[in-house]
Length: 106
Length: 113
Image (tube, rainbow over all chains, first blue to last red; front, side, top):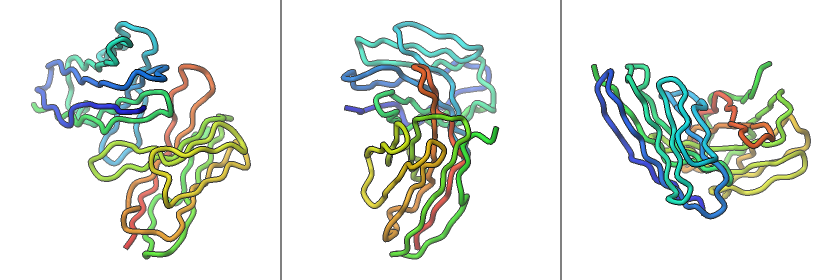
């Protein structure tokens, strides 16, 4: 199955931290991606997790727990340009969640 | 490298018309995908291909057809367009390696009136 769930919207203040959760069905799982999509643009790759644990890449980190079918994307030191939709995608057929719209306020 | 190129970028169709969305990539990727994205929604997989001559259905294939005669090209055909097919269509490709992330085209915005 490919049921992927993530929150619809989140709002945070510039400079703060936001955590976007993603849950997925574990059957057939072989990797999880996070993408960023600004309004009117194509998605761009942020991170990929296939093993449990935290992957850090600058201000963005992604965590995976395969046994729990759970991942999160952590955005630190938020900037206005981080306002976008964040899409979680499981690798079976690269099925995407509906996306979480993050709004960063000054 | 041009990456993934989609044409047209914008198109308006009348109900019942047919058209083909073109997608080409120059990265020699075997895997290619077609997604649609409705306003305020995530991406839904229409069709995908794991190599020339091989295609398979995704989550929402009804009303669409694809072909993959070459590694480079993966056109998406809409037969008998309906208002429900008004959407933004994204083509994407990825390399074979395990960590292969998707490379997206810029999207094709289709309106069916």
